[in-house]
Length: 200
Image (cartoon, rainbow, N blue to C red; front, side, top):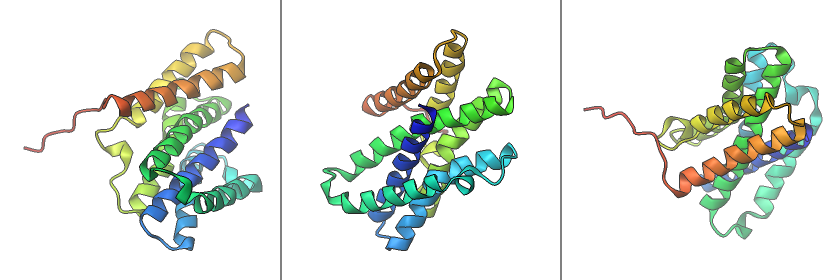
């Protein structure tokens, strides 16, 4: 289940990055680069911080193949998406839930404190999107009013709470990722957000 979620998250973020780049009218090379850094940016930073080098995608070419597949699927089916914004949001939300879990698990395997694991999970989920948005000349979602990184932190707290119940790992991963995805969907639907600071 953990490996499957990792592949799904990589594919989801690669497609999210590719769709964003196409929306910005980048050339095919630009679209591929944005797809790649969106998919592996957070995981790369996480692995460097915990001393896990070479980083994950350099150890296993399967991730590179999945990103390439996501890149081509985004190009081939871009006209099939009724609303580009809806598609971007869907892929981004799936990636958010899955990558938070991956970061949490890496932190646990390294023997880190739960609070640091939650930070790694949030970083894994958000940093690829931060790079994507910066390269596409957008203010990153994580820095705006929309609830984004906060959901990852909440998901991490839920994860460690459920972990104390000694649940099966597959159930633990599934429930935590669904909680993150559902909260993200509800936050957008009901316009939940953090109030921005007034500069005046």
